[in-house]
Amino acid sequence: MSGLVPLLVTLPLLGAAIALIAGRHRKTQVAVSITTLTIVLVIASILLYTVDVGGQPIAVSIGGWPIPFGIVLYVDRLAALLVVVSSVVLLAVLLFSVGQGAADGDDDTPVSIFHPSYLILAAGIFNAFIAGDLFNLYVGFEILLVASYVLITLGSTESRIRTGVVYIVVSLVSSILFLASIAMIYGALGTVNMVQISQRMTELPQDTQLLLHLMLLLAFSIKAAVFPLSFWLPDSYPTAPAPVTAVFAGLLTKVGVYALIRTETQLFAESDVNTLLMIVALATMIVGVLGAVAQAELKRILSFTLVSHIGYMVFGLAIATPAAIGATIYYMVHHIVVQTTLFLAVGLVERRAGSTSILRVTGLMRAAPVIAVLYFIPAVNLGGLPPFSGFIGKFALFDAAAKVGTPIMMVLIVGGIVTSLLTLYALMRAWNLSFWREEEDSAETESRISYLGGAPAAGIQTERRVIPRIMTAATTGMVIVTVALTVFAGPLYGVCERIGAALLEPMSISQLEEEAGQ
Image 1 (cartoon, one colour):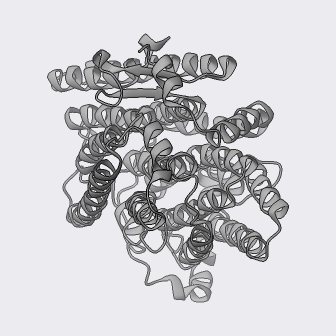
Image 2 (cartoon, one colour):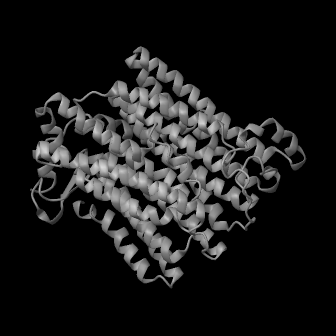
Image 3 (spheres, one colour):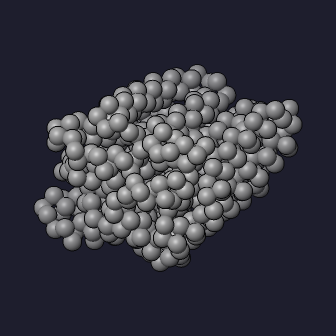
């Protein structure tokens, strides 16, 4: 099985090269992209089954170089699960973008540029998830960021260039901090291998450990959009084309959360900054959801809810028990799928109504009942209504916090409940105004919510466009996946519990060398 691991990265890179060469042949690019991501999904599923049943991670030393001199690719349950989920999301969004490109003549998503960049983005995401050392994790971040720079500015409109510049600057600052942290860790410990770092970290003085810990937290918190380092996200994501916004919202911040999970559970297990994480988690949840409540534009509402729900994942890390880590992983999977689905549904709303402003869109329940359902199901899921996966994940987090039982945990539980209710309010208000409200009621309604009128992009009206069946089918498929997270919550949550328990059990370097065949 170890021979399959490098294919998770090399196949998308090879597919990107072929797609670039076939730039003038749209059908070839589409076939290459879909085939590549499908094969990666199959390989990742096989690896997930193997590591979960066998109970042992798979480590591959590239080129046969001994640890710590060579690159080690490391696939445990967490890495395999996230590659599987990411493959599903990337494949669904790709199908959505193919339909959009065919309908629009590739104006918003130029195929010759989109497909190579998209596959490079996928390679960077997969490489980050299976990286066994910090420098390879950094390389994964840079690969996906370079591709994201291209994708976020597709179409070269003024707003996309402006927000793309902000995104690039913030990403570069985060990357510089991460690279500086790697240099400091290597200078202090003589290695960047994660297993060796976890073993040697206790040899350093406490103040040195704390400095290194906070440096990595700062770098990863920017990438994960943790408050107050989330200022860039609500303005950056909504301006991109619908499929780009969907995949960014679902996956890019979660790569930062993944890095935080590795940092807190493996690299600095003995360095306790949990109180700081709790404060940050609460602020992220509350500030993010208050921002969502104040918005009049659907993409910005979802962008702010994205920030607020990162707070739940930081909350789970701060609890720092196996049950809490397992709940965090489950909620992370839930959020990747549901947030992506909501952005795809909003993309359909934009095409059908010519706007995503809840001040302008009316009567979609009668005009487009299918879109109404495709928005409603993931919206109530994200809001945490039972019996959906959002409720399951939040309940598991609250239960893990209640078992700890400290006063600050109780405060965070209350904050999490308030955030969930406000999320539901913001999303259902948008659904009510956009789908239930009729044209003749719009003037009266706008007078009651006039305080939202100043929201950026709220007044933009674009041409109404036809919705190809493949776009609706891709969104429907993602809605089915969100429901499957609830239907199959038992087996999935079991995997997440095993991940939580395994992450808090340190792996020895001899075991890693044995897995890598050294």
